[in-house]
Image (cartoon, rainbow, N blue to C red):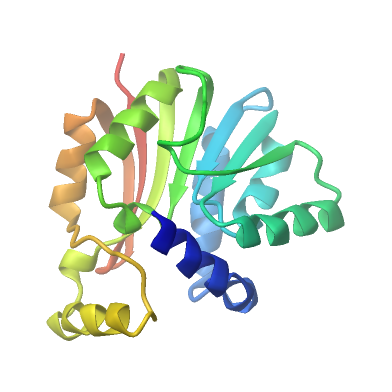
Length: 206
């Protein structure tokens, strides 16, 4: 956990300057997600990074708790929120496991570009399920490392040894869908903008 925090603290300035690779796909994900939102909703985003997506979603909900493992990421996120005049986001440093969050207190949980970075995915999904109100939604956009070209899968361990990549799991599409089902979710919407990623809206089953 300490190594992951160190990696993302160091990566934050570069991450903040990076451009969205597929703007059209990003806008579609925003639109689909906001189509589910309601003005009074309480939303949790874990792994919020520098806060860009939380800031764009903020006008569509009542309140967002945006969390990240990296203090440096959150410093940038808080500055961006102030500059945008957004006041309904609370930023907290920590992980799903470490943060004290009340059970069944969120209408939606967002885990965007983060599930493939988790060592214990099943525990994370169980935690998300517990934090959601009955009928709440979980929105994820996930890199499918298990489905990408073999060359890139072989390159990842080398990049990790050089300190250029964090931990990543070898999740594939069917594995992710099965894990969600086993955790008590029903998948309502899924879309693959490319073979190596999957966008999902899943609802906590009653």
